[in-house]
Length: 340
Ligand code: NAD
Image 1 (cartoon, helix red, strand yellow):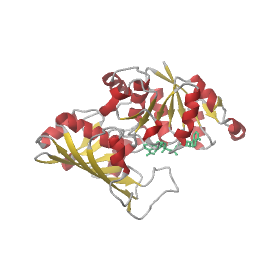
Image 2 (cartoon, protein in one colour):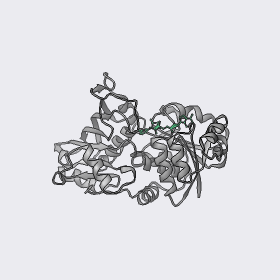
Image 3 (tube, rainbow, N blue to C red):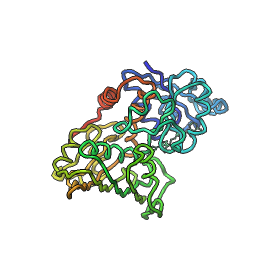
Image 4 (cartoon, helix red, strand yellow):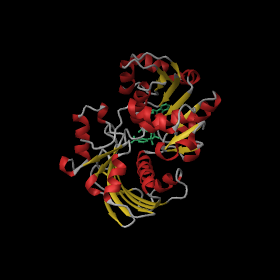
């Protein structure tokens, strides 16, 4: 059993922690928290070991949260650390991981140069095998890469033009906006997502534009992909229907929005209503010669979870891409086919 430590128990961290606990080949040593907030109380209730900075032990004690040790103790005890601390904080921790000789998985909020490789399970698992530091790209980039690499199996992807409608905040974030505006992010083109895709697919011709919308549920991508050869709508539909980590929504199911996708996830009893699969609106798939058009929704809170689990296996050389993806999908109930 691989001993995994989780630093940063927020939106991404708590989901990755749960996913680690579901893996047959991994054990969660514990999680690190800096403040004794509700997330720390939840972790305690779930029986997870909580590690905190040495100077915070007293405040956790006073709040009634039992502490297993300091963050260094947790890192020392682990084989690998998943860092899910806020943007830029992970890079500050790298020195500590190096000090104890531990491998680490970073998130997309860090700059690409924090790690040896930027990672997408369906694109470059093999490149990440044995790498000490791996960066799982952001939620938007993970969805773009999954989709591009899946279409690339149908016919070589020559060009991508994408418009990204970003959710303004995660549901728990009470101080973020906008609440009544659409905000170009940034107003200049291309947005940073294209560069992030190029951190994995170095030579791809890609331009992205992004706008922030006042919603918390999911992102939406509007994609135009040029392939080397002509494909039919049916080819594209079948390619996605046969690839794990994608779900299609058909028009007749009357699921017409991100809100209804999340409602379906609730109704299906999915944990935290998470949908780590890319959710494609089947009716949006349109082909014209070598061009493919499609729209899909991205659940920002959960899409990177399976990629984090695969990155752990790749870093420690524990499994081939095929085996790791299979174990991850089975343990996390990640499907393919139609959403409903
Ligand atoms: P978050 O704010 O929800 O969680 C971060 C957690 O780290 C919080 O619990 C916070 O208390 C804790 N923390 C803060 N400083 C710390 C420190 N010094 N040491 C240890 N813990 C500390 O953030 P998040 O949304 O989970 O984002 C984490 C990373 O994942 C970022 O790089 C982000 O860009 C990336 N990411 C976020 C999303 C998303 O939609 N939320 C999606 C994909 C990737």
